[in-house]
Length: 157
Length: 368
Ligand SMILES: [Zn+2]
Image (cartoon, rainbow over all chains, first blue to last red; front, side):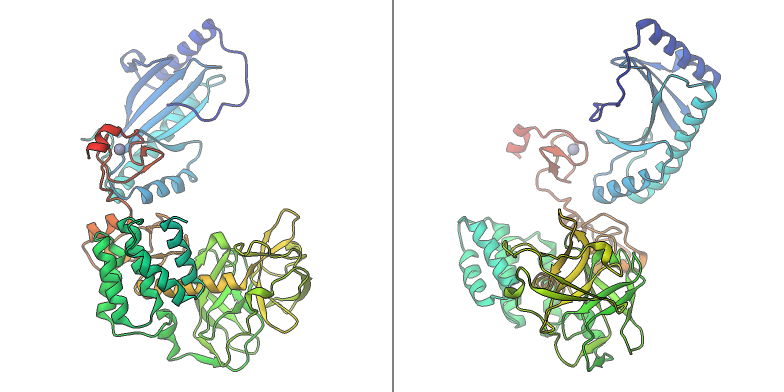
């Protein structure tokens, strides 16, 4: 997904060695929360990606190689329906204001709930809390939104 | 001037009350080859406004529908007109209440509005039928407000329309006035004109209009009062030395920080627009989120067609089965050309589908 805004602070770019360290850190964190990192690994254009199931939610985790290492966690919620888009977009913005440390967004025709933070200082407990929160949001939102707006829930045909 | 410009001009004339001149121009434009079918339909819809008699209106809307057969609003307006006997030009919301309307012998300079979004505010009667004007900021998303008139019992007012971009709210009351309120002619609002702003709190502010009203199109009057001086949430009516209403003070300010007032001529034009809207759509609901009239509830829709916010359950129609075709029209989701990528008919912005965000392929769009 292209970015409209920069991330603000311009710190020195991580060296290849630091990035490898970040990669080991994420894999360690995934292992610590019970995810088999090598099985969950997916091909991405740059950086690294993993996907796995948490409850009813599909979770995607990305490690971006740009600037400093960033951890992105996102969960697809639903495909956009063919109708009532104005009402749905408005509802998404209303809900967006109620989320803590997470944002709703649309990429192509899928609604996502999203969190991003600097990798530096992240430990397994915090990563676990982030993933739990996102999974919980995704789980609550997909049923409610699909019922109200009739969009197909992500990954459920 | 293009035919489109002429149409806009004619609509403007109609809104300014120049019905005869507007009707002549609209009659010509309705058959102009320079307009597409939808614009011709619009000409007929506005032509219908030039006369009060129902048969004329019905004929106009029938012609409009011939040009724009998929227009749900015209279809609906026509249905309403055919079903109802000829009606006088009043707001239905007010007409219903007038049977029990109490008449005020004296028109109060300012009335108090309580129960809006920002505390106590002021308002002024702008018509003999008890219609009040205050600011949109003062009312917010309230559906009803309490109306306080000095020496009278409190009454409940229904917010019937809000124009957030003009910071105006219109409120219907179960009151009528023995005499029409004294309103300044549009030519009066001039630089250095002295006024007194009346607040429902009893406070009075003296001031002057600070800048000549050069562009007649601006709805605002600049004053030499600072918003911090306002004793309430706004809507304080401004009167000239002859006691004529010239505008309503708001908490908006210009670049110099001085409070702006809404011109009374602009308020009246919007109120006239509401009367026309009500004639065409007598059963439309009111959306408290954006302030517009909404028809979605009548067709079983659950959200406002203007802002997308969820409508209150009691604002929705009783019909169990939504009228899907009408709703698609209303929500703008019946584009003739489906998205070349996802086939949705929700329209596009800057060449991208509003659903999937994909750029439309011109080849497929051209072949239709
Ligand atoms: Zn599309």
